[in-house]
Image (tube, rainbow, N blue to C red; front, side, top):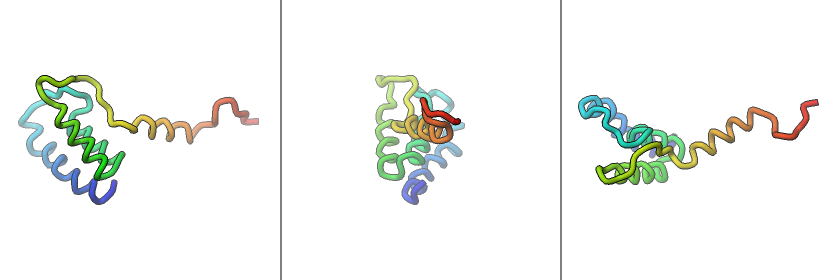
Length: 94
């Protein structure tokens, strides 16, 4: 995580520690907005991750959508990590 992402993650972590237990678990999305923010900051850095987290919080309102909303680009990074550990399809190990 970049230094800017660490700075942006501090208020999110403080919210999760101090306010989230009092507010309850009434999240419209999975993962929660705070978890989404931490994942976006870790995946995309301070600027893009902060922008994605800000947009997500704006989408979270009573008239908004709900359901599964993963961080964009996170699945591709996981797929690449999985593929780098295995051989390419069609290649022979002989």
